[in-house]
Amino acid sequence: MNTRIALWSFLGLFVLFTVWYFWPDPVIEQEVGVLCPDEPIQGPQSEKNPWLHDDFMITPLASYDIRARILSRKEYGSGTESDLSPVDFALGWGRMSDSFVLDKLDISQGHRWYKWRVNDLMPIPRDEIERSSANVHILPATDEVEDLVDDAHEGNVVHMTGYLVKVTKDGNWAWVSSTRRDDTGDGACEVFWVESMSIEH
Image (cartoon, rainbow, N blue to C red; front, top):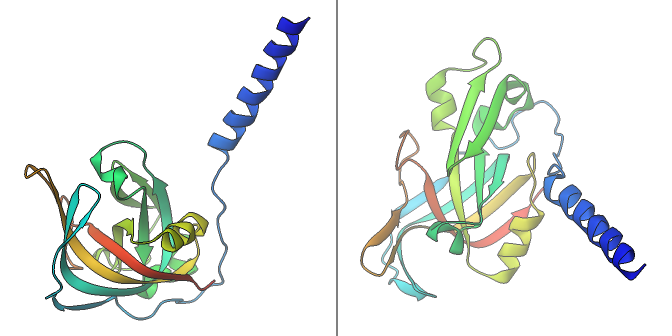
């Protein structure tokens, strides 16, 4: 009898874990219209000194202030990068924060990349999509920021400030942020050390 109870208890826990693990992340619905009209604000090359965080050397490249809509979010639990950055946000501003445009795009993330695909006709020019959105590797600077990152969902409008950074470890591993909004492909993602964050709606 005890064996049967233990088996059913194990199966129950397994089912609960499976449901929790595969339960889709909530999506926040927004009205049609541009929610984040302004481009991110990037400061000049930072004079702030590098600092050590665990085994990583963090070198600030530029201050960064962004208010954007989360187009997608993806959590990562493996690889050296995940020790610092457990989540990537695909972010959009300008017309890439407008539900009218986003409803015509399929957006996905994987392998630390962000991809978009058009359902039918291009809602806005390709170069505007590329200049008004980015895959951002989020490096929470504090536990408070990390909690807010966990609470943020696709569709939320967030405001974050901090630094675009270069991260090195052991002299043979490096992760370097893009400092341009018009680049694409390998190396085009922002590596963002987030010191403050708010979820606006």
